Length: 355
Image (cartoon, rainbow, N blue to C red; front, side):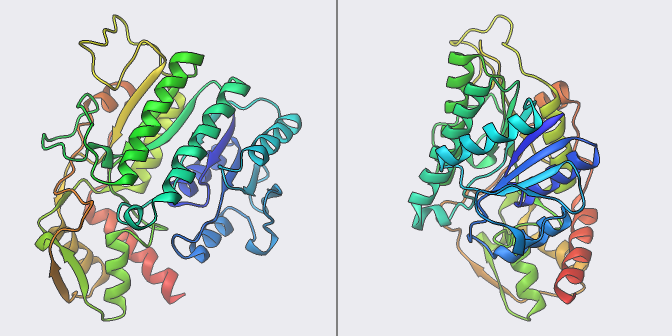
């Protein structure tokens, strides 16, 4: 099939793009290559996909040296006219778009407190342009990234997609919840099949340097202390990247349909009379942060110097995914525990930075 993957140079987007190409699908990858974290990591991910950083030119499709069916374009999704032109030209060359997997976003909970404009521009305006693209092209299925952050002040665990999520604690979370509502509107008005995926603390090789486990590893490798918030008592549903990739692809294969007998007064927010669904992608086995750090220390073969601090603004004390609906509808099950996952990350991390 023919896919568009946004955020193709990002952590999850890189893995999803690579897997689709290995399966023989055609992919147009789009990424703004912003500098929220070091761009060299994004360039190195692209290198794994056969894209040379020095050849990248904004708005110009670039063919891969490794995958004949892959083209990459550096483009901001909020650049509406350039996005529409790019995709129209691509369709003239390659034909129909079967799926759009939208993984591009301005990430980061705490960064959204200091830089709110970036989140409205990328996560709201950019997502609107993707929805408009799906509308104009009658794309058969849009799969997009949401986040466990939408659960906000929800104290009920595990977090279910049927729970109300009306109390976000960061602008990042608010933009992700807005994406879900915008997607539902387009599914309702224009009959566009849309599936939202709430990711829970994704980790693994080629991960994001702003994530705690990655920052810990960088500090440990330099002999610097690590900041451990809430005395390491926070619970996180750490989910390995291969499991997330598998979930994204399974979601893309299953087109959502209207829920039979839907009643807006009785049904939960994860289903609709429109072709709309929400799913959690989480490990379903939350770990205390301090236990996660101990496992990371073992994997890296080095003890960390810890600096304990109170919980940060915008953080939540615990995340835990209820994946009953995901199991039932997508036949998806996380398979990687933190011992295996952090061992794989540590091997990559040591090789990448020592190399």
